[in-house]
Image 1 (cartoon, rainbow, N blue to C red):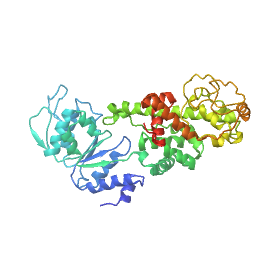
Image 2: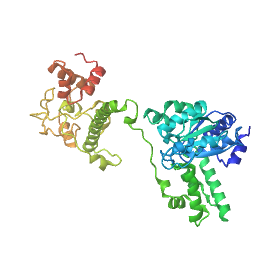
Image 3: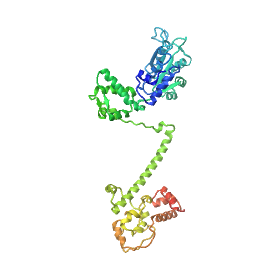
Image 4: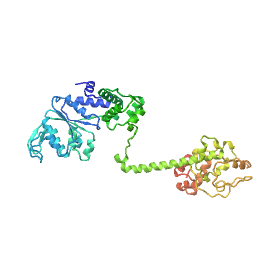
Length: 461
């Protein structure tokens, strides 16, 4: 048995990828037997070379070999080509004719594009593979033949079987030993080796200097998907050798000569193509949309709160104009009572100590208020003078409010925002008889946020 390096040199196979070497090793091991072989792979990956390799390393190497493209033979004549016919079998048959299975007795037949074989011909082929018998068209005489069949396809035969376009029994009879030939995009390490091989061979034939690629051009070449595989790469190497005036190409030169290298069509699996995907995809999509909309709402509210902090306290931040341009919230009646509690705090510490942004959830709808903070829930504190603030004022105390509160009396009271929020939640639940949905609407927060707050503050309902 010939070793792998010898086989590569003999058949001009260039590459060192594990997938390629695995296919070659399988072909070498199965060659001495008479087993049927099915070579699978995309167009242009070298399936015919593998069939030649199998024949030349078998006991039939001194007999005939022929490669037949089943897709290229018309349906009306393929039976005659393979199995022959007798005189008068059809209108134009003026004499007997032997088919390939008769003339290549003892040899090898390579049936390329086996997936395109007509159903009637598949039946005749199955009989040949099972017991070596065939009948010429128009004859009733059974003949025997000893032919080894090596088939190849660039389509998924199991899909053709499910579609009813290929016999299942023939598929399993052909694929006694399956060989999977890797595509060029699966052999990234071999792309530049093949390019140099084709470029050097072409340069030698044309008596010109071979072209070379720099590192960036080589990387660009390796990132291309190569739908035409080795055949396409060979054409590219020869075309560049003729059209390029330079002998060392950069990535820019390569892109100018081969614009398709810049195309990136990334694969994506559609839900409809996955088992059971069409029925569940819409439900999952609805759930995903709901989560995204909730996140968007939360982020909008958080941005509005931060913008209020910056605008009302003249904080110094990066890109402040962009933050200040955000849409401002309407008002915050649920937190209006807390303004009184923080009025006495130092103006410079309001932004850093007064609020825990993690506990501020959402903008609430407008609630009418008669005085500065009437209806907030805690009554009105005594002030020497109180400006009449509108309901659209933000919860953050501005500088005018600081000046107003500077004249007020400072009393000792609970300044915990968490406790105030807990009391507000209790009041809302009592008001709505522990109906969380209505209580959440009253507080201006989502029901999910209310549930989290109840658990966090251990509020009994």
